[in-house]
Amino acid sequence: MEFLTFALPKGRLLQPVVELFRDAGVFTCEISEDTRKLVFDDPDHGSRVLLVKATDVPTYVQYGSADLGVSGKDVIDESRKDVCELLDLRIGRCRFIVAVPETSHVSSVQELSCNSRIATKYPWIAENYFRSMGIQVEVVTLSGSLELAPAVGLADAIVDITETGRTLSENCLKIIAEVQPSSARLIANRVSYRSRRNDILDVARRLEERLAGRIESGRGGGECACEAADRQSIASDD
Image 1: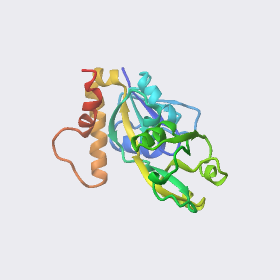
Image 2: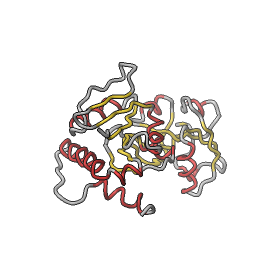
Image 3: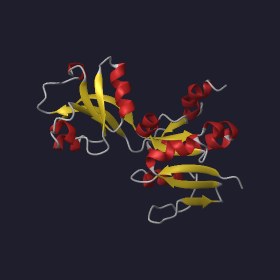
């Protein structure tokens, strides 16, 4: 049997993602991080699940080790891997923001001084955002708590993701701009999308129908949203 292989992210997204896939009937095997097992097969549904680090999901998908994967929009954009983004799963919703100290006179990104230092874990997203705004900044890449950077003078502002804004408030930071939203997305390997298109679109439709049912807003007829979303991303390969 040729399995359809999924790369799912370890961590906080795993259980809600697994629950969604089970509800949609994509697979029913037991999947948990409370084991050293990293590969889970479900022969009844022709599915294989790989548990990988969240930031590695797009890599597994791009290179074909997985046909499909679930990854945050933040990870997809920052990694810039060549994958097909098919469907917004509406899980793990958060937003990219620009924040400065509450004591700062700055209330918008346009008021930042030329060559202001911006601390972030997402240098490509930050650089692309400020470039699109026509604002010249110096991006400082950090891997730890960004909230510390403005407090000790390392940076004038930060670009980070937030869900509620609570951590920012607790560290005396205020939001001055929203960069983009982020949530978990279904992504596909480009070769798999062509060779196993029907199988992949069936999975996407199942998920989409389940999502529609969850918000009680049934979608009748028409093209699956994943096909419409993917049309432009694969057009250059046609």
